[in-house]
Amino acid sequence: MEKIIYLDNAATTRTAPEVVEAMLPYFSELYGNPSSIYDFAGKSKEGVAHARQQIADVLGCGKENIYFTAGGSEADNWALKATFEAYKSKGNHIITTKIEHHAILHTCEYLEKERGAKITYLDVDENGIVRLEDLERAITPETILISVMFANNEIGSIQPIREIGMIAREHGILFHTDAVQAFGQVPINVDEYGIDMLSSSGHKINGPKGIGFLYIRKGVKIRSFVHGGAQERKRRAGTENVPGIVGYGAAAERAAATMEKRAAKEIELRDYLIHRITTEIPYVKLNGHPEKRLPNNVNVSFRFVEGESLLLMLDSFGICGSSGSACTSGSLDPSHVLMAIGLPHEIAHGSLRLTLSEETTKEELDYTVDKLKDIVEKLRKMSPLYEDFIKKMK
Image (cartoon, rainbow, N blue to C red; front, side, top):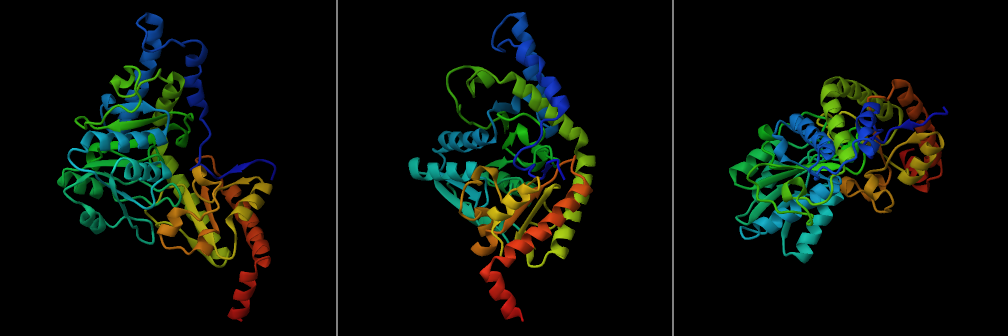
Protein backbone atom coordinates (compact mmCIF):
# COMPACT_ATOMS: atom_id res chain seq x y z
CA MET A 1 0.00 0.00 0.00
CA GLU A 2 1.63 3.24 -1.18
CA LYS A 3 -0.41 5.82 0.70
CA ILE A 4 0.14 6.75 4.32
CA ILE A 5 -2.24 5.18 6.82
CA TYR A 6 -2.42 7.81 9.52
CA LEU A 7 -3.48 6.33 12.86
CA ASP A 8 -1.98 8.91 15.21
CA ASN A 9 -4.81 11.43 15.48
CA ALA A 10 -4.28 11.83 19.23
CA ALA A 11 -0.92 13.41 18.37
CA THR A 12 -2.36 15.79 15.78
CA THR A 13 -4.97 15.88 13.03
CA ARG A 14 -5.14 17.02 9.43
CA THR A 15 -6.43 20.57 9.21
CA ALA A 16 -9.85 20.34 7.55
CA PRO A 17 -10.19 22.07 4.13
CA GLU A 18 -13.06 24.25 5.34
CA VAL A 19 -10.95 25.35 8.30
CA VAL A 20 -8.08 26.34 6.01
CA GLU A 21 -10.56 28.21 3.82
CA ALA A 22 -11.87 30.15 6.80
CA MET A 23 -8.33 31.09 7.84
CA LEU A 24 -6.92 32.19 4.48
CA PRO A 25 -8.37 35.74 4.27
CA TYR A 26 -6.79 36.63 7.62
CA PHE A 27 -3.26 36.05 6.37
CA SER A 28 -3.10 38.48 3.47
CA GLU A 29 -6.45 40.28 3.10
CA LEU A 30 -7.91 40.94 6.54
CA TYR A 31 -4.53 41.23 8.22
CA GLY A 32 -5.23 44.14 10.57
CA ASN A 33 -4.32 44.08 14.25
CA PRO A 34 -7.53 43.53 16.24
CA SER A 35 -6.39 46.05 18.84
CA SER A 36 -6.25 48.92 16.33
CA ILE A 37 -9.25 51.27 16.22
CA TYR A 38 -9.74 51.81 12.46
CA ASP A 39 -12.39 49.96 10.49
CA PHE A 40 -9.98 47.67 8.59
CA ALA A 41 -8.64 46.24 11.85
CA GLY A 42 -12.21 45.82 13.02
CA LYS A 43 -12.63 42.98 10.50
CA SER A 44 -9.96 41.02 12.34
CA LYS A 45 -11.61 41.86 15.66
CA GLU A 46 -14.92 40.56 14.30
CA GLY A 47 -13.24 37.32 13.22
CA VAL A 48 -11.85 36.78 16.71
CA ALA A 49 -15.21 37.54 18.34
CA HIS A 50 -17.03 35.14 16.02
CA ALA A 51 -14.58 32.33 16.78
CA ARG A 52 -14.91 32.97 20.49
CA GLN A 53 -18.69 32.57 20.17
CA GLN A 54 -18.34 29.39 18.08
CA ILE A 55 -16.22 27.78 20.79
CA ALA A 56 -18.46 29.03 23.61
CA ASP A 57 -21.47 27.46 21.90
CA VAL A 58 -19.79 24.04 22.00
CA LEU A 59 -19.23 24.33 25.76
CA GLY A 60 -22.58 25.94 26.59
CA CYS A 61 -21.02 29.07 28.06
CA GLY A 62 -20.70 32.76 27.33
CA LYS A 63 -18.04 33.95 24.89
CA GLU A 64 -16.58 36.16 27.63
CA ASN A 65 -15.41 32.95 29.36
CA ILE A 66 -13.09 31.91 26.50
CA TYR A 67 -9.46 33.11 26.57
CA PHE A 68 -7.20 32.20 23.67
CA THR A 69 -3.73 30.78 24.26
CA ALA A 70 -0.92 29.33 22.14
CA GLY A 71 -2.11 25.78 22.87
CA GLY A 72 -3.19 23.26 25.49
CA SER A 73 0.10 23.27 27.38
CA GLU A 74 -0.04 27.02 27.94
CA ALA A 75 -3.67 26.75 29.04
CA ASP A 76 -2.74 24.02 31.56
CA ASN A 77 0.17 26.07 32.89
CA TRP A 78 -2.02 29.15 33.19
CA ALA A 79 -4.79 27.32 35.04
CA LEU A 80 -2.47 25.84 37.66
CA LYS A 81 0.11 28.58 38.17
CA ALA A 82 -2.26 31.54 38.15
CA THR A 83 -4.80 29.79 40.36
CA PHE A 84 -2.12 28.92 42.90
CA GLU A 85 -0.92 32.51 43.02
CA ALA A 86 -4.44 33.93 43.29
CA TYR A 87 -5.67 31.53 46.00
CA LYS A 88 -2.53 30.78 48.03
CA SER A 89 -3.84 32.88 50.91
CA LYS A 90 -6.65 30.32 51.22
CA GLY A 91 -4.44 27.24 50.89
CA ASN A 92 -1.59 25.62 48.99
CA HIS A 93 -2.93 22.14 48.22
CA ILE A 94 -3.67 20.88 44.69
CA ILE A 95 -5.10 17.46 43.82
CA THR A 96 -4.36 15.85 40.46
CA THR A 97 -3.73 12.32 39.15
CA LYS A 98 -0.73 10.21 38.22
CA ILE A 99 -1.89 9.89 34.59
CA GLU A 100 -2.11 13.57 33.64
CA HIS A 101 -0.35 15.01 30.60
CA HIS A 102 3.13 16.30 31.41
CA ALA A 103 1.87 19.86 30.96
CA ILE A 104 0.03 19.28 34.23
CA LEU A 105 2.53 17.01 35.99
CA HIS A 106 5.58 19.17 35.28
CA THR A 107 3.69 22.30 36.29
CA CYS A 108 2.74 20.64 39.56
CA GLU A 109 6.37 19.68 40.12
CA TYR A 110 7.38 23.30 39.56
CA LEU A 111 4.76 24.58 42.00
CA GLU A 112 5.84 21.99 44.54
CA LYS A 113 9.57 22.67 44.31
CA GLU A 114 9.63 26.39 43.63
CA ARG A 115 6.41 27.83 45.09
CA GLY A 116 5.73 25.67 48.14
CA ALA A 117 2.63 23.94 46.87
CA LYS A 118 1.50 20.61 48.27
CA ILE A 119 0.42 18.21 45.54
CA THR A 120 -1.56 15.00 45.90
CA TYR A 121 -1.20 12.66 42.92
CA LEU A 122 -4.18 10.29 42.94
CA ASP A 123 -3.83 6.68 41.91
CA VAL A 124 -6.18 5.27 39.26
CA ASP A 125 -7.67 1.81 38.84
CA GLU A 126 -6.52 -0.77 36.28
CA ASN A 127 -8.61 0.99 33.62
CA GLY A 128 -7.14 4.40 34.35
CA ILE A 129 -10.19 5.77 36.17
CA VAL A 130 -10.00 7.92 39.31
CA ARG A 131 -11.70 6.46 42.39
CA LEU A 132 -14.06 9.10 43.74
CA GLU A 133 -13.56 7.90 47.31
CA ASP A 134 -9.81 8.52 46.93
CA LEU A 135 -10.55 12.05 45.77
CA GLU A 136 -12.84 12.70 48.72
CA ARG A 137 -10.20 11.42 51.16
CA ALA A 138 -7.50 13.61 49.61
CA ILE A 139 -9.37 16.87 50.23
CA THR A 140 -8.09 19.01 53.09
CA PRO A 141 -8.99 22.49 54.38
CA GLU A 142 -5.98 23.72 52.37
CA THR A 143 -7.18 22.33 49.03
CA ILE A 144 -7.70 25.10 46.47
CA LEU A 145 -7.76 23.22 43.17
CA ILE A 146 -8.61 19.83 41.68
CA SER A 147 -7.20 19.17 38.20
CA VAL A 148 -8.26 15.94 36.51
CA MET A 149 -8.05 15.40 32.75
CA PHE A 150 -11.32 14.73 30.93
CA ALA A 151 -9.95 11.85 28.86
CA ASN A 152 -6.48 10.37 28.85
CA ASN A 153 -4.32 11.07 25.82
CA GLU A 154 -2.67 7.64 25.86
CA ILE A 155 -5.27 5.06 26.86
CA GLY A 156 -8.42 7.05 26.10
CA SER A 157 -10.20 6.45 29.42
CA ILE A 158 -12.87 9.04 30.21
CA GLN A 159 -13.05 10.22 33.82
CA PRO A 160 -16.26 10.72 35.88
CA ILE A 161 -16.03 14.46 35.32
CA ARG A 162 -19.57 15.32 36.38
CA GLU A 163 -19.10 13.54 39.73
CA ILE A 164 -15.70 15.18 40.26
CA GLY A 165 -17.24 18.57 39.54
CA MET A 166 -19.97 17.92 42.11
CA ILE A 167 -17.42 16.94 44.76
CA ALA A 168 -15.35 20.06 44.06
CA ARG A 169 -18.41 22.30 44.27
CA GLU A 170 -19.62 20.72 47.52
CA HIS A 171 -16.26 21.52 49.11
CA GLY A 172 -15.89 25.00 47.59
CA ILE A 173 -12.84 23.95 45.55
CA LEU A 174 -12.04 25.04 42.01
CA PHE A 175 -12.11 22.32 39.36
CA HIS A 176 -9.92 22.37 36.25
CA THR A 177 -9.92 19.75 33.51
CA ASP A 178 -7.45 19.22 30.70
CA ALA A 179 -9.88 18.51 27.85
CA VAL A 180 -7.33 18.60 25.04
CA GLN A 181 -8.31 15.09 23.87
CA ALA A 182 -12.01 15.38 24.72
CA PHE A 183 -13.13 18.77 23.38
CA GLY A 184 -14.95 18.22 20.10
CA GLN A 185 -14.82 14.44 20.55
CA VAL A 186 -17.45 13.99 23.27
CA PRO A 187 -20.22 16.33 24.49
CA ILE A 188 -19.12 18.78 27.18
CA ASN A 189 -21.30 21.30 28.99
CA VAL A 190 -19.26 23.20 31.56
CA ASP A 191 -22.25 24.13 33.72
CA GLU A 192 -23.67 20.61 33.86
CA TYR A 193 -20.23 19.19 34.68
CA GLY A 194 -19.33 21.79 37.30
CA ILE A 195 -16.15 22.79 35.47
CA ASP A 196 -14.47 26.04 36.53
CA MET A 197 -11.59 25.93 34.04
CA LEU A 198 -11.01 23.86 30.91
CA SER A 199 -8.01 23.60 28.57
CA SER A 200 -8.12 22.73 24.88
CA SER A 201 -5.96 22.76 21.74
CA GLY A 202 -6.98 23.40 18.14
CA HIS A 203 -4.90 20.84 16.29
CA LYS A 204 -6.63 17.88 17.98
CA ILE A 205 -9.93 18.57 16.17
CA ASN A 206 -8.80 19.30 12.60
CA GLY A 207 -7.88 22.85 13.47
CA PRO A 208 -4.52 24.61 13.20
CA LYS A 209 -1.53 24.12 15.48
CA GLY A 210 -0.33 26.85 17.83
CA ILE A 211 -3.75 27.87 19.12
CA GLY A 212 -5.70 26.84 22.21
CA PHE A 213 -7.99 28.29 24.82
CA LEU A 214 -8.67 28.30 28.53
CA TYR A 215 -12.30 28.44 29.63
CA ILE A 216 -12.57 30.40 32.89
CA ARG A 217 -15.88 30.50 34.74
CA LYS A 218 -17.07 33.97 35.77
CA GLY A 219 -15.98 34.70 39.32
CA VAL A 220 -12.80 32.62 39.25
CA LYS A 221 -10.07 35.00 40.42
CA ILE A 222 -7.36 33.74 38.12
CA ARG A 223 -4.49 36.11 37.40
CA SER A 224 -2.88 37.15 34.13
CA PHE A 225 -0.39 34.70 32.69
CA VAL A 226 1.31 36.77 29.98
CA HIS A 227 1.92 40.45 30.74
CA GLY A 228 2.51 43.29 28.32
CA GLY A 229 -0.82 44.31 26.81
CA ALA A 230 -4.58 44.50 27.25
CA GLN A 231 -5.47 41.63 24.95
CA GLU A 232 -7.88 38.90 26.11
CA ARG A 233 -9.50 41.33 28.52
CA LYS A 234 -6.13 42.07 30.16
CA ARG A 235 -5.54 38.44 31.12
CA ARG A 236 -3.27 37.24 28.30
CA ALA A 237 -1.11 39.83 26.57
CA GLY A 238 0.14 39.55 22.99
CA THR A 239 -1.25 40.29 19.55
CA GLU A 240 -3.90 37.72 18.77
CA ASN A 241 -3.17 34.88 16.36
CA VAL A 242 -6.15 35.86 14.23
CA PRO A 243 -5.87 33.17 11.52
CA GLY A 244 -5.36 30.51 14.19
CA ILE A 245 -8.28 31.75 16.27
CA VAL A 246 -10.58 31.89 13.25
CA GLY A 247 -9.48 28.40 12.27
CA TYR A 248 -10.08 27.09 15.76
CA GLY A 249 -13.58 28.54 15.78
CA ALA A 250 -14.38 26.90 12.45
CA ALA A 251 -12.92 23.59 13.64
CA ALA A 252 -14.95 23.69 16.86
CA GLU A 253 -18.19 24.38 15.02
CA ARG A 254 -17.39 21.61 12.53
CA ALA A 255 -16.55 19.16 15.33
CA ALA A 256 -19.81 19.84 17.14
CA ALA A 257 -21.88 19.47 13.98
CA THR A 258 -20.29 16.14 13.01
CA MET A 259 -19.72 14.72 16.51
CA GLU A 260 -22.59 12.24 16.72
CA LYS A 261 -22.11 10.71 13.28
CA ARG A 262 -18.32 10.79 13.52
CA ALA A 263 -18.25 9.17 16.97
CA ALA A 264 -20.58 6.37 15.84
CA LYS A 265 -18.30 5.54 12.92
CA GLU A 266 -15.12 5.74 14.99
CA ILE A 267 -16.56 3.55 17.76
CA GLU A 268 -17.56 0.91 15.22
CA LEU A 269 -14.09 0.91 13.65
CA ARG A 270 -12.35 1.15 17.03
CA ASP A 271 -14.15 -1.92 18.36
CA TYR A 272 -13.51 -3.78 15.12
CA LEU A 273 -9.80 -3.01 15.39
CA ILE A 274 -9.68 -4.03 19.05
CA HIS A 275 -11.47 -7.29 18.27
CA ARG A 276 -9.12 -8.24 15.45
CA ILE A 277 -5.97 -7.43 17.41
CA THR A 278 -7.01 -9.13 20.65
CA THR A 279 -8.39 -12.27 18.99
CA GLU A 280 -5.80 -12.77 16.25
CA ILE A 281 -2.59 -11.88 18.10
CA PRO A 282 -1.75 -13.84 21.27
CA TYR A 283 -0.45 -12.34 24.53
CA VAL A 284 -1.90 -8.88 23.95
CA LYS A 285 -3.70 -6.62 26.44
CA LEU A 286 -6.13 -3.77 25.83
CA ASN A 287 -5.21 -0.73 27.93
CA GLY A 288 -7.84 1.67 29.21
CA HIS A 289 -11.51 1.23 29.98
CA PRO A 290 -13.21 -1.11 27.47
CA GLU A 291 -16.26 1.16 27.13
CA LYS A 292 -15.66 4.50 28.85
CA ARG A 293 -13.01 5.57 26.37
CA LEU A 294 -12.63 8.06 23.54
CA PRO A 295 -14.37 6.97 20.34
CA ASN A 296 -11.14 6.80 18.34
CA ASN A 297 -8.63 5.40 20.85
CA VAL A 298 -7.03 1.95 20.76
CA ASN A 299 -4.10 1.23 23.10
CA VAL A 300 -2.71 -2.28 23.36
CA SER A 301 0.40 -3.88 24.85
CA PHE A 302 2.15 -6.84 23.25
CA ARG A 303 4.18 -9.09 25.51
CA PHE A 304 7.74 -9.87 24.37
CA VAL A 305 7.78 -6.94 21.93
CA GLU A 306 9.64 -3.61 22.14
CA GLY A 307 7.44 -0.66 21.20
CA GLU A 308 10.04 1.37 19.31
CA SER A 309 10.88 -1.54 16.99
CA LEU A 310 7.18 -2.09 16.44
CA LEU A 311 6.64 1.53 15.41
CA LEU A 312 9.63 1.56 13.07
CA MET A 313 8.46 -1.57 11.30
CA LEU A 314 4.91 -0.24 10.98
CA ASP A 315 6.39 2.95 9.53
CA SER A 316 8.17 0.92 6.85
CA PHE A 317 4.70 -0.09 5.64
CA GLY A 318 3.39 3.48 5.71
CA ILE A 319 1.47 3.06 8.97
CA CYS A 320 1.70 5.91 11.49
CA GLY A 321 1.10 5.02 15.13
CA SER A 322 2.49 5.88 18.54
CA SER A 323 3.66 4.23 21.71
CA GLY A 324 2.08 6.97 23.84
CA SER A 325 2.13 10.74 24.05
CA ALA A 326 3.82 12.52 21.15
CA CYS A 327 5.32 14.91 23.71
CA THR A 328 7.44 12.13 25.19
CA SER A 329 8.09 9.99 22.10
CA GLY A 330 11.85 10.44 22.46
CA SER A 331 11.91 9.01 25.97
CA LEU A 332 13.22 5.51 26.66
CA ASP A 333 11.24 5.29 29.90
CA PRO A 334 7.97 3.36 29.89
CA SER A 335 4.78 5.40 29.83
CA HIS A 336 3.90 6.88 33.22
CA VAL A 337 0.25 6.22 32.35
CA LEU A 338 0.78 2.51 31.73
CA MET A 339 2.86 2.23 34.89
CA ALA A 340 0.07 3.95 36.85
CA ILE A 341 -2.51 1.37 35.72
CA GLY A 342 -0.23 -1.40 36.97
CA LEU A 343 1.57 -2.70 33.90
CA PRO A 344 5.08 -4.07 34.54
CA HIS A 345 7.96 -2.46 32.63
CA GLU A 346 8.39 -5.27 30.13
CA ILE A 347 4.74 -5.09 29.04
CA ALA A 348 4.48 -1.29 29.16
CA HIS A 349 7.45 -1.08 26.76
CA GLY A 350 5.47 -3.05 24.18
CA SER A 351 2.56 -0.64 23.92
CA LEU A 352 0.98 0.69 20.74
CA ARG A 353 -1.52 3.53 20.45
CA LEU A 354 -3.61 3.74 17.29
CA THR A 355 -6.04 6.67 17.09
CA LEU A 356 -8.58 6.89 14.27
CA SER A 357 -10.31 9.70 12.43
CA GLU A 358 -13.49 10.14 10.43
CA GLU A 359 -11.40 9.40 7.32
CA THR A 360 -10.14 6.02 8.55
CA THR A 361 -11.47 3.05 6.59
CA LYS A 362 -12.02 -0.59 7.46
CA GLU A 363 -9.66 -1.55 4.63
CA GLU A 364 -6.88 0.50 6.23
CA LEU A 365 -7.45 -1.24 9.55
CA ASP A 366 -7.42 -4.67 7.94
CA TYR A 367 -4.12 -3.84 6.25
CA THR A 368 -2.74 -2.57 9.55
CA VAL A 369 -3.73 -5.67 11.51
CA ASP A 370 -2.33 -7.99 8.82
CA LYS A 371 1.02 -6.19 8.93
CA LEU A 372 0.91 -6.01 12.71
CA LYS A 373 0.48 -9.77 13.00
CA ASP A 374 3.57 -10.37 10.86
CA ILE A 375 5.63 -7.75 12.68
CA VAL A 376 4.78 -9.04 16.16
CA GLU A 377 5.63 -12.58 15.08
CA LYS A 378 9.00 -11.49 13.68
CA LEU A 379 9.90 -9.46 16.75
CA ARG A 380 8.96 -12.26 19.11
CA LYS A 381 11.14 -14.71 17.21
CA MET A 382 14.07 -12.42 18.04
CA SER A 383 13.16 -12.26 21.73
CA PRO A 384 14.94 -14.65 24.12
CA LEU A 385 12.22 -13.93 26.69
CA TYR A 386 9.56 -15.16 24.29
CA GLU A 387 11.61 -18.25 23.49
CA ASP A 388 11.95 -19.07 27.20
CA PHE A 389 8.24 -18.43 27.71
CA ILE A 390 7.25 -20.85 24.93
CA LYS A 391 9.57 -23.53 26.31
CA LYS A 392 7.98 -23.21 29.73
CA MET A 393 4.50 -23.37 28.21
CA LYS A 394 5.38 -26.67 26.56
